[in-house]
Image 1 (cartoon, one colour):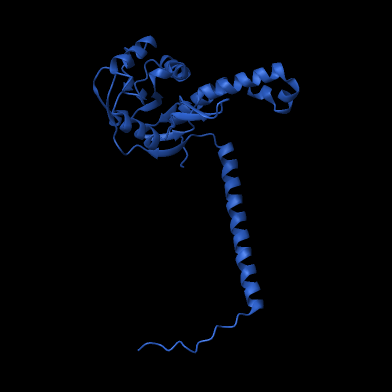
Image 2 (cartoon, helix red, strand yellow):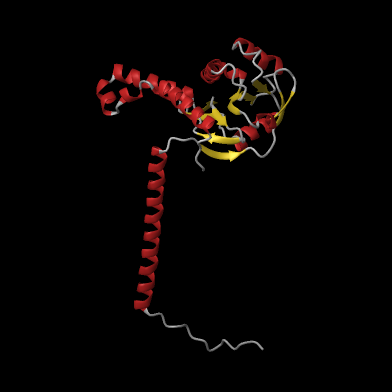
Amino acid sequence: MARNIGHLEPAERDPVQLRKTGLAITVIMLIGGILVTVAYRIKYRADEQDTRPHVVQRLTEVFFGRDQNNRAFTTEQLKGKFTVFTPLSLREEERMEQALEMMKEMAQKFPDDDRLRFLGITIDPGNDDLEQLKAVLEKLDVANDERWFFVQAEEEAARGYIRHKIRVEFQESIPSPGGPRQRFRSTLVFIDENLHVLNPAFDLNSAREVEEDARQMIENDPEKAEKLKARERTNDLEKAVERFYEVLQYIRDGDLKEG
């Protein structure tokens, strides 16, 4: 039977009760905001004090490609190894130089460590064929080191895997007189023996640029340099390299933190 609602009247609203309800909701929101802020600050301080690398995610999806010797490559080959990864674009040789030299230095530092792997995946396979990838390794004088894999795959698959699985961004926007422009970003990231992608990632180009800017500021505008503590940034590249090897040692020791 349908209800007769023709003679219903609006309920009376008690202003006092409404104010109490509003106040209660406001207090709950304030307390919630305070708790979130406090939790964030605690985590931030913990991150500052805990220098261990942390897990970003695990490579559960297998990536397929061909290496510089035209052999099949999959990320399954990295299991049980400590891998240093960087995106590749041979059009950007100057931007890649710092990262590749860091990888070469690491390979030379541990020449007999078969647990190490050095992986690059090109984001521009239409330009970077396998012969060219091999030529880069020959130029680095590591072509005979079987721990190195420079890999080519279908462009969309390669870019998607790097960006969404390895979680490395290979492009960045920088200001210019004509407006923001895109450029290649050369980044180094560690992958542990269980295929965990780790942070921090390393942008050695950025460290070098900050260092150079700090030195120019000290020379050209000492007052501003003093105010901005530019002298503390004049060895950013050296600090980044030290941090790189510190992270490697944590990985070797299996001393990681979650999330």
